[in-house]
Image (cartoon, rainbow, N blue to C red):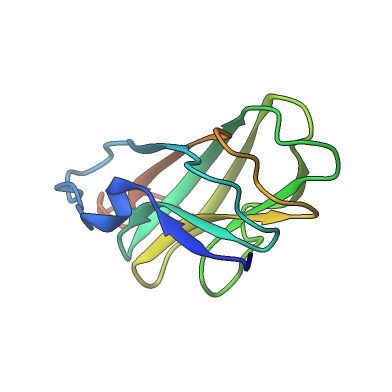
Length: 140
């Protein structure tokens, strides 16, 4: 078995919400239930984000993924942009607060490291953002 790339429906459908409302905070969420063991280094594309989004928080929740399994969360360019080597052996969650403006559309993805992603594993992701420069006098 080889590492694979899979996507949630949010990425497959490439849906972007109307994101130009000044000051509004949006949350893109996805839940992925694995339908068969996937080797280490497999990538699950979770949610699409638009260029100009200012990411302010990323939350993830996982079922127990097995001993030695860690997860990087990022994009095609920087696979560990949001989380680097998050330990997911036991079921749990984590959050990171940041202020990161995107300069291009991106799919936020989770890369499975250390061991295979077990069958029926559950990955959930919530990305909170607002559109940069949507209020004229807003400070960065």
